[in-house]
Amino acid sequence: MLSPLTQKRLATEIRNILNDPPPYIIAKPKEDNILEWHFVITGPENTPFSQGQYHGIMLFPIIFPLGPPSISIITPNGRFACNTTLCLSMTDYHPDDWTPAWKVPSMLLGFLSFMTDNEPTTGSIVTDDSTKKQLAKESKKWNNDNNPIFKDIFPDLVVENIQFIRQQEGEEEEERARINNINGPNNNGENNHITRETDQFFNDMSSYYNP
Image (cartoon, rainbow, N blue to C red; front, side, top):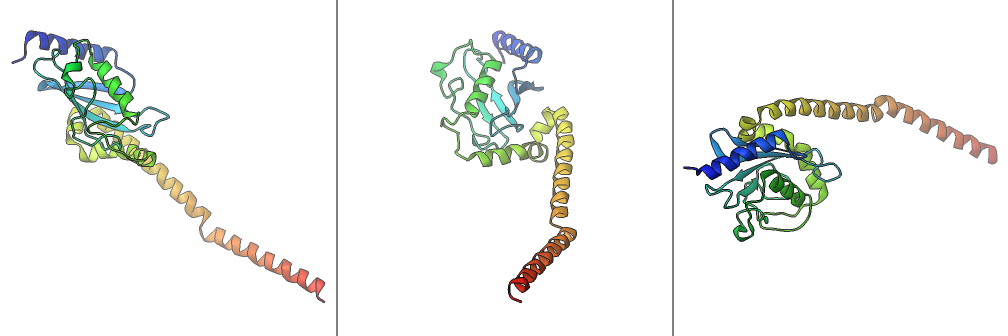
């Protein structure tokens, strides 16, 4: 059973993060478990994670705020292993460094800052930027297709993702059609016509110099 201190602190955290959400982040507890929080990070611009959508979990101990939470990420991202507790200064990997002054928005912003850096830690992985960008591009579809917890907790985002995916697929189809038109039969014919005219030009020039 939760202590009054834990209940009061988490209720305050919920109110604060709903009223003043940090940039790029939304977070809320699971309806049937106030100790299990789910967050979604939108990858910041000018990073390999730009426009990616990353779902993660914070698990708070029953003694919170006297002890730190754990943090893990579910969506493939190229920076951290999925479903693995991460070693960060404000997590349960470092209980001696924990201070109750840490607030949920500050912890999540700290996590985001660490995510966009390259510093190694327990749970981090090494990939190149092209891999991170590809995973960012695929992240919304991955969450919708492969992440039932995400679909249950963030139904509004699921709807937004469907619209985004349809738009993305439409743009990709238009780009394929444009490329096909550039390389299609009509242009091949034009290219062949240009080639024949070029050949005729050199033949004429050869006849002129070699009558």
